[in-house]
Amino acid sequence: MPYSKLTRLAFAIVLFIMASSCTELANESLRGTIAANGMVSTAHPEATKIGVAILKQGGNAYDAAIAVQFALAVAYPNAGNIGGGGFLVYRKSTGEIGSLDFREKAPLSAHKDMYLDQDGEVIENLSTRGHLAVGVPGSVDGMTKIHQELGSMPFSELVEPAIQLALNGVVLTDREATKFNGQRKNFIETNSHTPYLVSNTPWAKGDTIFHKDLAATLMRIRDHGRAGFYEGTTAQLIVDEMMRGGGIITKEDLDLYQSVWREPMTSSYKSYRIIGMPPPSSGGVAVMQLLKGIESYDIGTWGFNSTRTIHIMTELERRVYADRATYLGDPDHYQIPADKLISDIYLKQRFSDIDPLVKTFSQSIKTGSVNFIESIETTHFSIVDVNGNAAAITTTLNGSYGSKVMVKTGGFFLNNEMDDFSVKSGVPNMFGLVGDKANAIAPQKRMLSSMSPTIIDKNDSLFMVVGTPGGSTIITSVFQTILNVIEHGMTMQEAVNAKKLHHQWLPDHILYELNALDSITYSELEQMGHVLKQRDGIGRMNAILVLDDGLLEGAADYTRGDDIALGY
Ligand code: GLY
Picture 1 (tube, protein in one colour):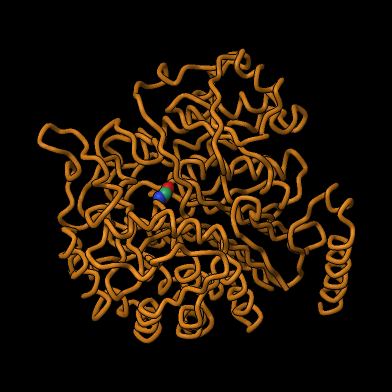
Picture 2 (cartoon, rainbow, N blue to C red):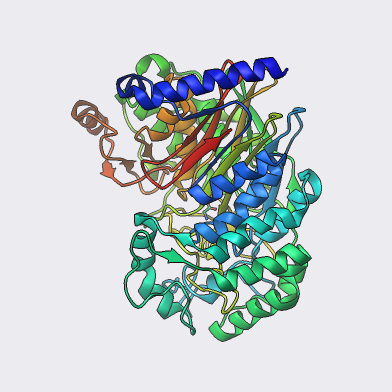
């Protein structure tokens, strides 16, 4: 249908000109990037450009996703990675759906109490910083599996753009320079060598960083695929690094690592089908529980961030996060009642004690006491190609730059994903999340995640691809963004930009972004018993919406990050 595509393109150009020349109109309805043939939304302009270039060369969404993953490892090393892990949710143009779990695993010699001292108390920072915090990375295995099953271009051509980026250098944005400078001390203290990202003078916007060692590692991956990371030189560099810093990942751990194709979770919200990541992510279960829970409330009429809407969202979130802590973990190690948790019968009973006017105290749902330490790292990207194939990938090192351990001469950071386990029953992790047996540490087990790459279809057609970083706030950010479009009539970009709130059962307070609430709503919520705390940056979404006319609206959170959506 070349004629209709041309028409759509012409329409896209008109929209673009209107958007750039008419600020008033743009303010009335703020659209993201509009394109007819394909869309890539990522956390970094270089990665987005590389993804679009692959699509233009005829690559499909999965080719572009592989190229973007490697590009982010270069351009966005605080979350983009080869030393971490993640999840893919996909929906092919044929309607086939699937998911790949390339989450990190606990090393063979990991054990339940490995972060506790002789008195059984948690040793500070041991699961979050340094070599012992590192889980066996899954990203490279994941990319090779995606390539085998879903890719169409030669693997080497998908890694090559990242190599060129690493060799030619990446120009720092203001935000990135600040982050590097902020971590300087940690980088020096955590490593026995000085990572090349440590500069004698502070980094500044416009400086170029060359990633020579990382380029060499990527060349080995380009030439040998999985073996370029889990065997040979790279594997040796990782094991040497572990030995230098008291880590426990061995060659056998690397050898054994395999990512896993899993049946995605599906559920419905009104006439939409939600396709999400199953455990070991809690994302699919939790987003589906929340959407099912809110389905019967008329929040479209109540309004965006109105008192009633926020109260009901909060009460649902309180219960959903309590379930997360109790029931969710690695399905290969623990029996997870995922389907039961999203069943209508269970949810009706679970949410039956919600009072529309008064808050419930989290302690009355289940006891526990936690602190909340902020971190919003991890990164998400959404891609749709010309044929309508869709990829939603959320990938992470966990904290910013993961464990802060950089593999000497490998040029890449290793994750601190071990902190996503429940290191001690009821004791919060860095996101303030608590857990129990389901998420206890065991050799070869995957740690529970909140990552929620999500695809939505309607009447058998693709509707939305969405996801975000943000640790425990990932679930609630995805929840709100979906509702912003479906219930509050926002464009994809408006939904991404919209101010967000978060509640996670414990601690028992609502986090809100500046300007998320007006003063009346604030005091009404207080009167209902809610405790409110302001926090910066909830969510940093990368999403794509298929518009009624078939055009794609790509949205990227340029308000909270350097994110950009581009299409063609
Ligand atoms: N590391 C963040 C998550 O997986 O939820």
